[in-house]
Length: 201
Image (cartoon, rainbow, N blue to C red):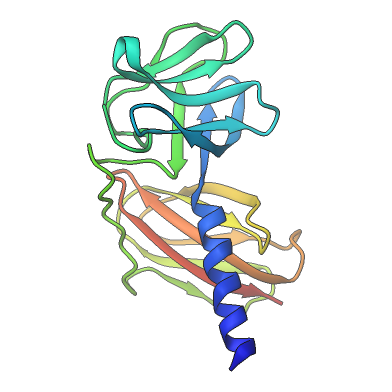
């Protein structure tokens, strides 16, 4: 019984770690992962990248969410969708270029919102299936009804794979990853999410 409790607690902790990340993709500079860093005076969460060079935060003077280059506090992108407590997902509001250099925002997924408040439309229905599970490297995702963004996290909460999913069935290849338990999150263009786990043998 104690072992089951500890396993459940570990899964809960890892799911929480995985859900406190944001992946932003820029057309000229690729993908970057941001991690929860704190809460500001407006009650909104802010996120820093691994190097502490960039942040995603709410900029009160302009009432907008921004992606910032921290040395010199140069704003690269802004979005006036005033979501609370997390920034708007890709496709919610509009991420506009303020300082050119890395192209357009082509994706922002993870711990973000499609609503003004923190109430998310989290969809954990069985409509989306992953098979085979367990599997040996090639996995199929079926039941995806809208273009979506797939993120896969390992047992330590690190993002190890991300890609777009198209409606229908998509096959992904994870042969380069180590054996173990992985967690996935699928976010569609309306901010609806599906989460689950699978085993790579």
